Image 1: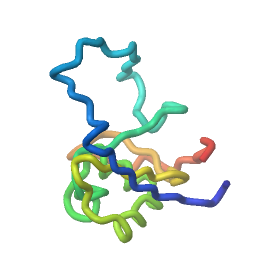
Image 2: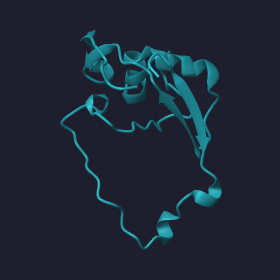
Image 3: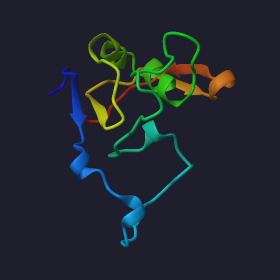
Length: 122
């Protein structure tokens, strides 16, 4: 529903971790693009795996992919209060967080680029 933010923590049991080195099957077809920012593409699952602490360095000096997502979607910052460090087999879904800011650049060139009206379904 609109106005609801949900945080879900998932754990993948060791019995379900793929044994990639023993697999004889190929990967399914996929589409990769560099023409758009991940947050500008509709109907995609965005995955963050860079840091075991959710948000990475968003409250310190970081300003790369994870930190930019948290800066432009400040509702994600709430997860820092309720999510403990992740284990290698865990992930957290942040559902319903709205994007409020546009940006340009990356890392040292990152800059606020105006308000963003988020019309994507939550």
